[in-house]
Length: 402
Picture 1 (cartoon, rainbow, N blue to C red):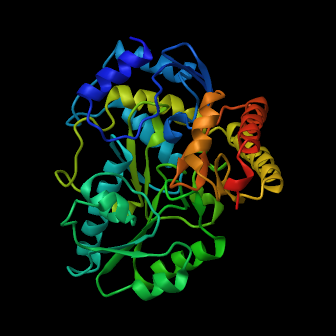
Picture 2: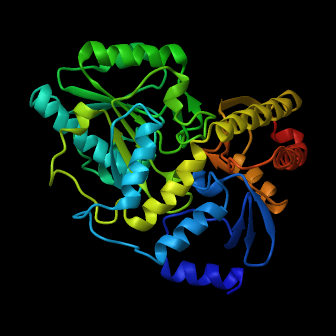
């Protein structure tokens, strides 16, 4: 099918839940994708941070092929060898002790909410059920996850929402401290808010949050679905802060493009789940786990992490160079290769103009350009992306600039 045919049939048969660009991608390799018309694009969206190893990484592809010809799925009623290997990889490279596998970030958040309430009921009492989350956060699209997401636009029309969630501004410690009640059991937050505009937690704030949780015997839950697994230049974003969470969620990059979510927890917390307390039919199945083993073995490599951090610094410097050039760029923020550029003009038009020139980026809200490219990009890729962005920004009429 050509692009028009794909779009026409998609509009007829697929639910209208995405504001899609008029683009049908059919092939990917490394940092590039091709559409149905044969046009090539430099991909700085990377499947919304899923394709951290680029498209069709040879080691991930080979692992999937080999596992698909051996054993694709069995129930978690049995031990699954690739799942055990992946759990070992994640535990040995993190500060947490036990792993639960599911299929998405939202499922991982749901598991974290259940586990935290089980822990609170066992150790803190029946009245401890409430979560404090951050404004501009994003934790997923299931009902509890969207309730934890402190953005009303995502919750509209879904009332009544589950009880037990309270919201405070990000990086505002006094507000967090004041929000604690006799019912609070946990603080849930992203160290770097991706969907909320690439907002990064302050170091001092994170230290205060950890101490507050310790002082009040609250669980600290980090959602690293987007910012984890090498994206920030360290394997996990929490490593930037010297703070270890009690529970952490992962997804997106963990299986190199194959759907997988992960819930990790400290031993004492994880022990609050027993047989029958939580489950996932497809979670950690042999095919997903084999892909995960291939991807995580690369993402945990120290040389790979160092290169990612260096490329992140290089890209950030280039974006600051654009900020000096254009008055409508308000700021540059982020860590590693999850970066945001605040703007006072229409971001959607910039996204479209970049696409027309062969670069895929996206805009969160209307005023933050988000850059989450594959971690395998080169300096040349970064230079080419910045050149296209520069060209697009130079064409913005002066009357549209503040």
